[in-house]
Amino acid sequence: MKNIKIILLTFTLALVAASFTSCIKPYDKPELVTIEASQTAFLIPLVGDTTDQASFQSEELLAQAMVATKEVQIPHRWLQTGRMEWSGKWIPAAKLIVVERTPETREWSTDKDVGTSSKNQAIYAESSESIGFSVGMNCSAQIYTENDAVKFLYSYNNKTLEEIMDGEIRARVESKFVEECAKYTLNDILSGKEKIMSAVRDDVTTYFATKGITITVLGMKDGIDYDDPEIQKAINAKFSSEQLLVTQENNNDVIISKANAEAQAKLIQAEAEAEANRKLAESLTPELIDMKQLEKWNGELPQIVSDSTIIKDFVG
Image (cartoon, rainbow, N blue to C red):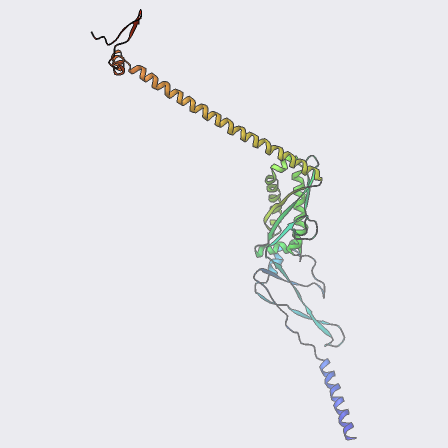
């Protein structure tokens, strides 16, 4: 009997303790978030009980919400869910939004093994003759400064730079590329790719700078892929013919150069011989001629043959 009373008393005390504990408002446990060096954080007050802000009123307000410290405590507020004071829970009073400022690089290509995405993300366009083709492109971008982070967050809410690159940036690149290519024939496009890309680059970098995004790299890659494979075959054939023509012209130039060199050498030799003969002729005098003849005389008189009579060794 005594044991039963002890058990009942213990049970009663436990119920009282449990009731007392449930009547106490739960402890507001601190919520801390660390901000990395490559990140910019904004502590945005929440509107209503559980509704996040869908957009921001101005860049100025966002700049004021920027967090300067590298460790942020999320403020909480008590949300009462029952009649009793302790019936409720702690919920965030503000939302921490972190903008990542590290560079992002995308490769928009038809090949899933080469491009960033497994999808076909090549840029498609047409020449002024309506010849369709596609090209791959590289693009790198970054949110450089905290002021850029403000512009980026104001423009795109809580999206990532990667999402914007595969969405809006790629769309604008393709739109401007199509616009530029439509101005030129296919031959002009092949010879003026850098001019076209320069126009695309200027447009894209200028526009997204106002959004807090700096485009650091934007260029073509992998060459041109034609919608009709026969076009590539024709271009290859034309290139081969042009190369053969260039080779023949080079060979002709070598032959002509060699002939010109030989003719020039002969001309120089002839001119030298003529000049030597001229100088020799100018130096000859009657006395010099007689001296040369005496140098050649062997001391014998000329032999005269007349009527079978031979006169030799005549000295007079």
